[in-house]
Length: 202
Image 1 (cartoon, rainbow, N blue to C red):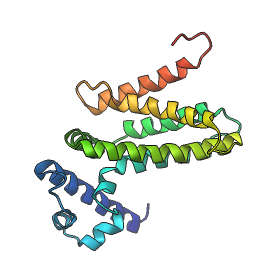
Image 2 (cartoon, rainbow, N blue to C red):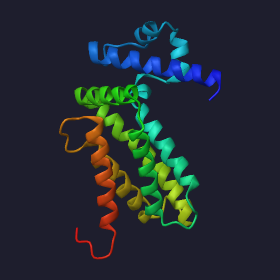
Image 3 (spheres, one colour):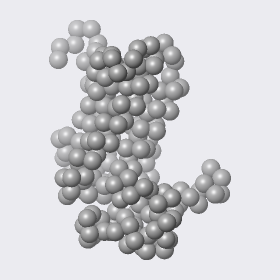
Image 4 (cartoon, rainbow, N blue to C red):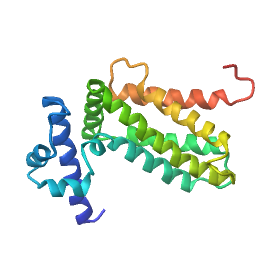
């Protein structure tokens, strides 16, 4: 990463950190883009160079995870079974979570707290996840040589894989630490893979 890219990333993270602090301190709806920009000493115009709106900022983890999965799928062998390829993509997300810095972990846990306190954001998160599933389905359909608008199996494969991630990330919650999330995600992936082995009884 060059100097310019590092500076942009530093600004993006500063915006996210300021926004999360304000969201949790004074409420998501009560926080304005102008307040977030002011906390980072940038203009609202600069804010919009990084995020289209507050919702985009609150959904940052979807963008990040989707990017990792799509990049991993692009690198997998073309003849690899689609579900196997998706499991490798999930493991790439897990590896990224495991390599999180303390600051990364703090951002993620604050976001979880924000979602817990704002049910309407959960709905937006579900909708954003659906867009990711659609993009993954297009990739998997391409690997299988089928039409994503017509082939239900492709969507079932993707839905199963993404459900694996949701179970690992979301339920049930115990202490809510990053260590717990990492462990549960690893267990969820392992269970999903075992479900497809011959002789395994669901």
